[in-house]
Length: 401
Image 1 (cartoon, rainbow, N blue to C red):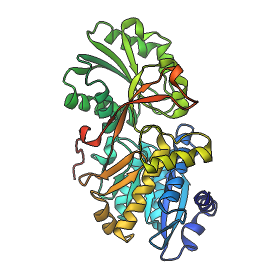
Image 2: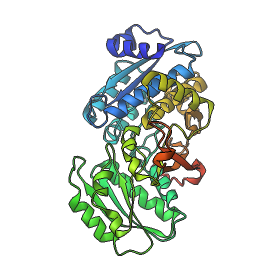
Image 3: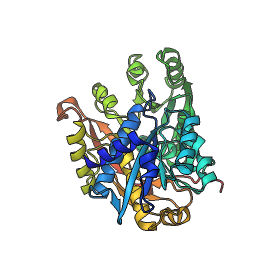
Image 4: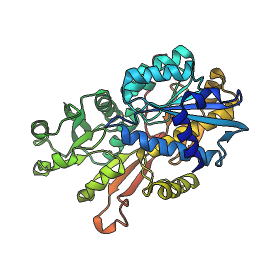
């Protein structure tokens, strides 16, 4: 497709296309993503696909915004915070990028926030999740299209709201994403669900393969509790649900709640029919013209539906295009004025940048895993229990500025 050829040329020629050849009237957008990182590679690939299709849809294939050509340059951070900082500095200082989008992980994003403030340039964070990005580490140049840990947590809490007494143990990776996720889950439960409580927290290294010891501690913490007993798993990358399930938590009446994940991972969960959880995006849930186009064109290009992070890339493209059209300028102050409180359309529906912290307010989804007999095709995995609208997701303002 036209847009992917443009991106490919930009990637190949680097600074030459991103700066030297571009005219003064061109808009320059750079995307920082961890394309060569073993964990984040799939996130980066999906984001690139979604961003490119988003730009194609939003510019009607012209790669122009109000007569301005758009130059796009992708740069690989390798998942390294130090390299992400260096590339963001290069984007603002050398490439003269008007907008930068990314990076992939929370560690990278947190390292990049001061760089945006130093150069007084807008950074649209996608898909990094940590609350601190739009919380206590935030500055006014930061906007986030991706959901944050509190939105994930509120959606997870909403799934249990009608269940009465609920005891929850949480298994998470011992990194910023996992710790942030558990803290946000606690806050969401306190706000939304007076009868639910976290009774045990278990943090393990991301590379853990043997879950016998942490699972036993979780089972011991839950087995004698009354009411619904849930093991929630907050995990980036391949989820350990199968290894936990093999230890038979059902012996103690424990229900697994792994959270929504990428399609290739969830495709392996077909044996968990009836499992309920929450998710940021699933291609079959939103019913709107943009999502219909997105799903159709993604299927044609990649032979599978758009995934979790594909939608994020499209949303970031929409935020960038909408902001440039509304501001009619690449000046940072005009962009900030235009983007605070700005609505923009995405495949999952309307998002709005909250004025106080520039976090995108957005819907989430409560899903149930389909029975195998009801699945119509390889990727037909989930049924929608309900959409959780943004207004039903209490999101504390955590920045101090």
